[in-house]
Structure formats: structure tokens, C-alpha cells
Image 1 (tube, rainbow, N blue to C red):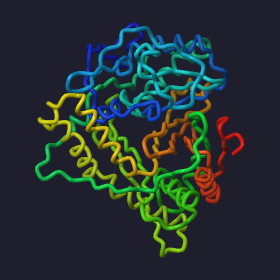
Image 2 (image 1 turned 90 degrees about the horizontal axis):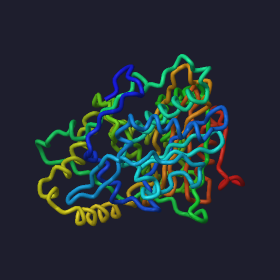
Image 3 (image 1 turned 180 degrees about the horizontal axis):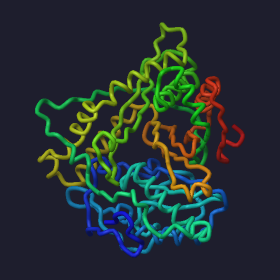
Image 4 (image 1 turned 90 degrees about the vertical axis):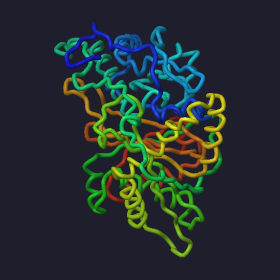
Length: 438
């Protein structure tokens, strides 16, 4: 394991195999070309990316990250990780839409890829490896090493070392914090939610609309309503669906917006594996109400989040999820049968949520490197029943919201950014070629 100050001459000590964390057990079962479970985090540099140097940077960084050096194997009862001893995957110019399926056989059996386009460095990760926290750690070290190679004179004082504050903890923090229930397990009821239907983009395209804004202006808007940035953005997204998709009409089912919660701060964890929980902000517009204002929707969704993001409720979520894995009888069922059951359960729940919006937080770089990096952002791939998703991150005083969608209609995204603009938050918009005429 790398501790403070250890150079690239030392490698992360790693066992030949490893278990999947509790959340990761789901992803190999449901992953497909249409539901890839691949997320993208990318860095925008100030100059064009040099592919050769980026490849060399990846060659140097990867040996230190055992979580990323794994390939997936199917055992008799569970999937498991095995150390991948093949050569580093090739860095390529971007060739597919964000979050495209990672064909392991064409990627040296690795479950992540690094691509570039113009000034952008993309890291795409199959969620079985790690969540956004782990992706950020890896991408930052890749960017650091790339910049040391590209600007050796400007960064002459920086040595080829992993940052001293990086942890390489690979514990399953779900299992570590699991508490055997002393009473009947809490049952999580779910019902159908609004589904975003509509004409889909042609040829498997994924449309991206990205909005960047100053954090100080966003904080000023949040202060007016007495909410946090995360609560504000979830409320604005929910309101955009109500106004842009439902056209301010009532609905028999709620708008259910899934929000991943990073569990590490709640449980003092530094694991590089997945460690998050899903909560759901719900708002069901009633027919008897002529029209809801943004403030009213924000109040409802904020209260919904406050009730769920508590230590007690997060404990219950961990207990509920891990209890299934710990069930002795279920553990003895062969993997092939487990896969069928898991797919059926997942398929049955596909209409229980409308969308997802994730905030991977503020990305900070060490001072010598900041002048060479303009921005960071992230994108989510689609999943069953969710044809649009939002993702948020911030860097150097700028917060960026990205919407990925397979729908041709952009009314929801337009309504979202219009809501922010009306609250005094200036937004700079960008789209990919799919929505150039939007």
C-alpha cells in the first residue's frame, strides 16, 4: 500500500482476487449494451491533449490502483474480481457516445477506459469497480502524472508520486457497517413513478447538455430558499420535469428523483470501492392544485430528502441491502439461478423511479496543477426506465450540471436552466453534436 511520500518505484500490494462489494453484485447481472452502468468523469485541459503522453501517464499510474487492475470472473455462487495482469488498456481518441458499453474482450479485460477529444480527458468506469469517489481519485492522479510529463519545467518541483492524501482502502464498507437487525427488517415500499417517454434519438445516440455557473451566484439563490446546493438542484430538476414534461398538470404517480448519497462521511470510510446509498426525492402534483410554483416544489423535495438522509435511515438501507447478501440459503444458490432472480426483481422495479441526479462534489487540485486544468464534469449512462439523468460537480468556483438523455425533446433541460436563470444564476450552455440545433 502506498503511504505518504512513496514514489512510483513502489507498487500497491494486491491479492490475486477480491470480492465484489455489496452494491457491485448487481451490476454484472444487469449490464448490457443498452444499460451499461458506465459513468464518465472528464477533465478539460487548457491545451490539446497529447495521446502519447496520456498513455504514458496511464502506464505509470495504473500499477498503483489495484481496484482498477481487476477483471471480472463468474464463480459458482458469486461474481468475483481477479487481478488483471494484461498490458495497460490503450488510450484512444473518443469513439463512442458517453457511457458506452465497455467490451472487456476488446479492452484487455479492463473495466474502465481512458479516451480524449481535443482538450478533454475522459475516464469511463464500469460501476462494478467503484463509484464517483473512486473515479475522481483515479482521474486526478492520471491528470497529475500527465501534466508532469507535458510540462516538466513548469512542474519541476513535483515528483512522480501518488498524492500523499490518497487512500487505497479496499474494504467493503457495507459489510463493515452492517448491523444485524434486532427487529423485523424495514421494508422499502415502492410504486410506479412518472416515466419520461418520447421520441428517441436515432442510432443509439446520447444527447448531452451542459451548463456551467458560478458557485457564488448559485449559493445566493439557495440562500433565498434556505436550502443547500444539492437540495436546490434536485428541486429545480423535479420542477423542470413537472413543468417541461407534465406541462404543469397533475399526475396519478409521483415524480421520483433518485439521489445517490456518498456514505463515507457518515461512516468515516475511505474505501475505493462503491459506498453509496440511494434515496428518492418525490413530488406528486395533485389535480386539485391549479399550478405549483418552483418554491412549492422545492419545499416538498427538500423535506423528502431531509427525512431520508439521516444516519438512522442510512443504517436501515445498509442493513436491508446487506441482509440479502448475508442470507445463508441465498448464498448457497448457484450464480446462474441468482442472476435470473436478480434480473426479475430489477425488471419489476424499473418503473419505480423517474430519473437520477448525482452530485460528486467539489474537485480540488493541488496548486501547481490548477493553471493547466479548466474544468471537470461528469455524465451518467441510461438505465431501465430512466431515459434522462443529471450529474453535478464543481471545480475552481464553477459548478457544472450535465444532462445525458436518449430523448430528442429538450424541454426538461431548458426548463431547468431557465429556472436557475430566473433566480439570478447566469449559465453558460454547451451541447454535443446531437443537440446542436436544440
